Amino acid sequence: MNDSDTDARAAAGRNGSVDRPSQAAKGSAGGRAPGERPIRHGLVLFLTCLALGAVVSAMASLNVALPSLARETHASQMQLSWVIDAYSLAFAALLLPAGALGDRFGRKRALLAGLVIFATGSLLAMFTTDAHQLIALRALLGAGAALVMPATLSTITSTFPAAQRTRAVSVWTAVAGASAVLGLLVTGSLLEQWSWRSAFLLNMVLAVVAAVGTLLFVPESAEPDQPRLDVVGALITVAGLLALVYSVIEAPTRGWSDPLTIGGIVVGFVVLAGFVAWELRREHPLLDPRLFRTNPRFAAGSLSITLQFFAFFGFIFVVMQYLQLVRGDSALVAAVSALPMAGAMVPVTRLTPKLIEKTGKVAAPWIAGLLLIAVAMGVLSQLRQDSSYGLIVGGLIPLGAGIGLAMTPATTEITDALPRALQNVGSAMNDLSRELGGALGIAVLGSLLNAGYRGNLDLPDNLPPQAAAAAHASVAGAVVIGGPVAQSARAAFCDGLEQALLAGVGVALLAALLVGLLLRGTKPQPPEGAEDMTAGESERLGRAVTEPLVRGTR
Image 1 (cartoon, rainbow, N blue to C red):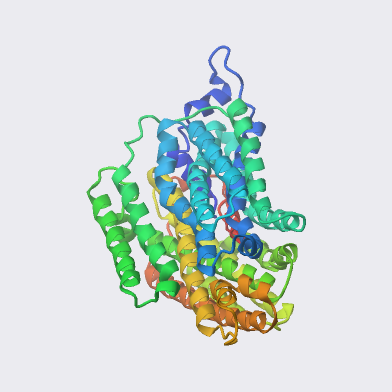
Image 2: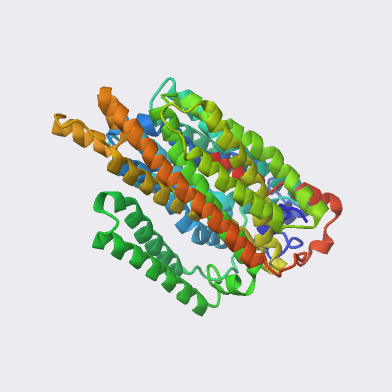
């Protein structure tokens, strides 16, 4: 069975099973109450995908605007990490409770609330001039996105009749895949005419249009008999992730051996361990930790996706700055420069399910993909001020191919390893792994980049203190000064880039090793209910989960 049986069955699992649609879906099939407005499925699909596109494009679009943002707000390299990571961190920490809130109290309500929060935060961000305010507003956007993303998919699966659901989910995933790349390109184009604020203008316009349309045309659906939300578990998760990410991002400034850095990291891990202990005691946990111990395929898929996106999101954060601040490319050229990665990723992603089906081997392409990611990161770690674009392409193509090879089996294993009754858990874990990996990847690789930059920056002794402080804060500040200061800063940035991407190599190799160990001796088994699917359904569903990974160039 291919990948996106995963998303269709997983989202349908929120409603209990594929065969038990919500009241909205029943109404759409002809069971409407007298006088009830008929559901316009095409319009519902358009609006939910528009909302999805808004939150997915926001994951990538600001990366291409970082140099402009740093120049205008005087943000330090550490603050740039926070500007990007605040969104991913809030998104990851709130994703599970936000999805549960939507299921229990109404998916339309959750979608509208998320879009309003997202649009309001974007509007405020357009007018801020302070990096700290921008970080807080990006976290607000992440909270809105956590409400939006699960509500879009569950609205589709609870509204569409079974005959149309597979195709609708495929459209949803295609939009999730394309919107990140489009977000980069559109923002890059807007930056040719305006500043980094254009990224938030794009967010706001998409969110407002989606919110108005949702209010008018999207039906409400809910599962009020869902268990009560585990508020304590959600708060523990937020506290643990915040302590961990904060300590890592602040480490280059305070020092890795500083007691506050070490203490914060220890506190983060202890609090997250407390989350595991808490969830083990809950009758209805947000996430049951026992699944990782009893189901090695589920554990391998979750761990692999987390580590893949750790490396990948960190790569995007580092390389987009390299293209503009070291090579001197415009924002649009930098966005276009990443297209070879997507060009390799898309065909490999589509061919991988057929390769697995033909050979009957899941582990081989999976591990090969992770090794390709490691090779690509190693190649890209050698980028210098005078490197040719050929070297960049030489890293981007194996990176895209590696992600395409590894993501398909990893995503499939998360849900195929679970029975139908737990497909909602598989869907949630798939999304959580991506966002958590991204948040940690930006924090760790961004921190290593900053440490390498600050440690290797060689400034003239006669440089005024104010200029020296600006150069130490970020490479963008040094480039504005120009001359030998800019030259030294670009060289130091490349040293930091090498340090960060070599860490990405290690993470990809660790992922390959752990996947091999976890899958050793296991045999793929069709998930419960898979025998009910036709070959045509399996083929159509086979693309639905693999596409969202393209959003990472989100």
